[in-house]
Image (cartoon, rainbow, N blue to C red; front, side):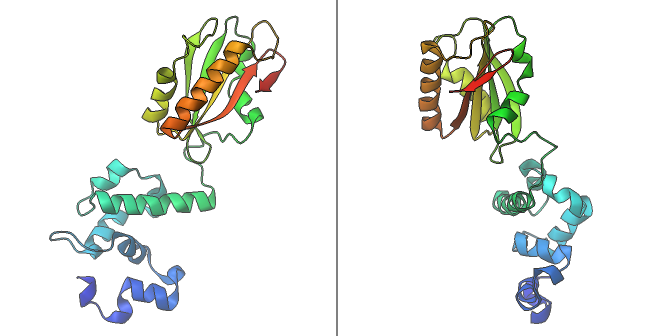
Length: 216
């Protein structure tokens, strides 16, 4: 049945205004997000199909491709629903698949412990989502670092592929000194400039030694 054919007091939006969202059923809330039916399917049927296929507790883990496959959900509605889900997850601080959250240099170093004992210099990048969760980690180069070996293209390609909004760059000094060299500073500055053009922030530049670390 179409929403316009329902008595006014039974329409989801009117019920929300009158009684508050907490008093609506799951399907009624989903109907509000979907907005309208499509083709031969009413908004009531589309909402019912979603909740039948995906239990409420699993809704927040849905991705765009899964939603877009559901009959009656086009790109626009899928984006609207996912945006609502994402705001909910952020408000509740829901973790995605228990991904590590990095809010400090120490948090980053905890994900880079293998660099402390590496015999050669490794340049590693951590890729973070909008909630500072680690979504990808990649070793860009191994060996003595210079600006020619660490190219922005190699650093930011995984960022784009993994929808990262920020990155953390790190490398080790097997010699034990944590001071930044001229090459270290040049690489960091070049990557910061490239990141600014791409809209991807370089959060930290970390040097790791066996017993110490430095964010420069």
